[in-house]
Length: 194
Image 1 (spheres, rainbow, N blue to C red):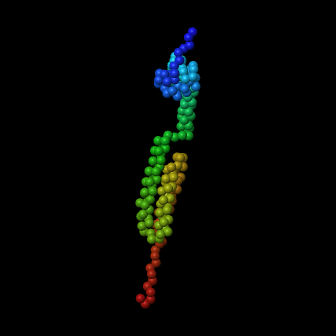
Image 2 (image 1 turned 180 degrees about the horizontal axis):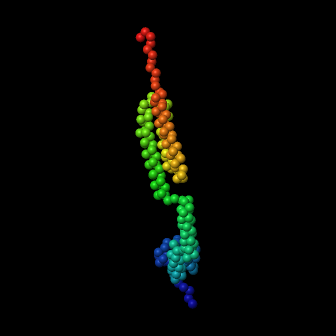
Image 3 (image 1 turned 30 degrees about the vertical axis):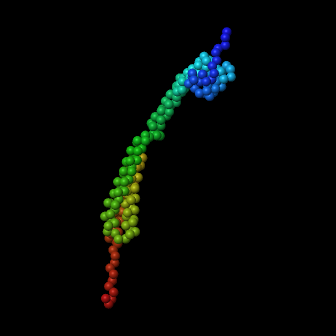
């Protein structure tokens, strides 16, 4: 039986649309069989390269059924854990948190902007700076107490802070009324001989 015909590397490279260097690399990897120095068997080179391309195309993006089942099982388990955590209220949806924070910050803004309106009539008649400062601070603390009452997680505990805030507000108003009467500047006495 006659030995199969061999071709030079240049012919094999042109036939397979590869560089000569790539043909040499594939030969070292065992993809393209080499017969003599710088010569390759034509049929063996073509068949080896076709097998190489076929094997490579099957490996790309293809996973075994076992791997696919493992991924699916892991994903289902993770989803079940998320649902369980949501049912236990261990996690919350981002949209729900955003809505709650929007409501909280809106309430804070509204309460704090109302402080000047509530406190202004009380401090308008005062001339004692420390008393005015105290009244403003009481107004701010009252607003913060009302906000804290609204932010409480325990529905039963809402009443106590609100009651305390209202009581503090009444104290402030009562102190202002009594202080208004009490803070009277004495008239200067006329100097004799004037």
